[in-house]
Amino acid sequence: MGGYSDLTIWTVIVVLGIGTYLMRWSFLGAVGNRPLPEWAQRLLRYTAVAVLPALVAPQVIWPAATQGHPDPARLLAAAVTVAAGLLTRHTLWAILAGGAALALGMGLMG
Image (cartoon, rainbow, N blue to C red):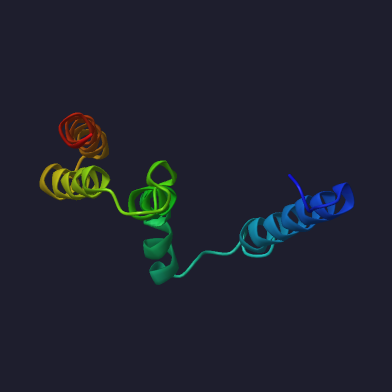
């Protein structure tokens, strides 16, 4: 990791750790004993569903394997995953369909 000193890296790690702790404490420590409003509970249900697309989206739109250029096979796999998820309403089937589409697309398109 050229360009960054050990002190800089450790400072970033400690600051990010403190920030993460404070964000979690704000929900668990400050609000943990009080009931959350209905709208907040409804929004929190979608947190887990939003994490996977947030992790995968950069790899679909700007994959490192193609030096950041969009790849038709990955875009097709993402579309198949979304379609399977909407049709089946089952996460595992969506992941399996997307994986199969990616393997097929990579095999056919290279």
